Length: 115
Image 1 (cartoon, rainbow, N blue to C red):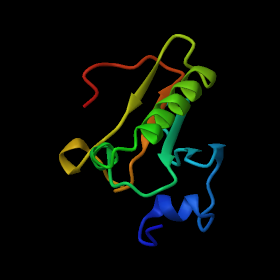
Image 2 (cartoon, rainbow, N blue to C red):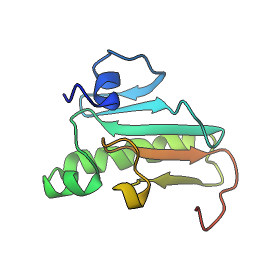
Image 3 (cartoon, rainbow, N blue to C red):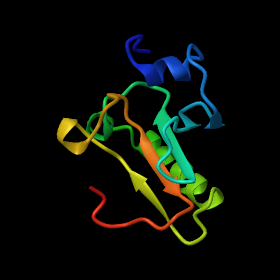
């Protein structure tokens, strides 16, 4: 656990969050600044800065679990007609918290390009 990381502190129970799912590998929470009727964040409990570092670590099981949980939440929480998964990586990719997390956006039509 990285004590300087807000998501590590949420995962460790030091900061409250509305949990949607938790198992031994991943945690899903509601985003505090939602951009859609459903805006969840799915993150690994173990700290990884971004998707590139998780892939470099060779942790395919956790990578798969992130997408499994994100997809399930997207479908269950307003994504009958579709949903969007977003992973921002690095500052140029729009990442603001250096702990890998998948944004799950559902419940409204999404536009393209996203920004």
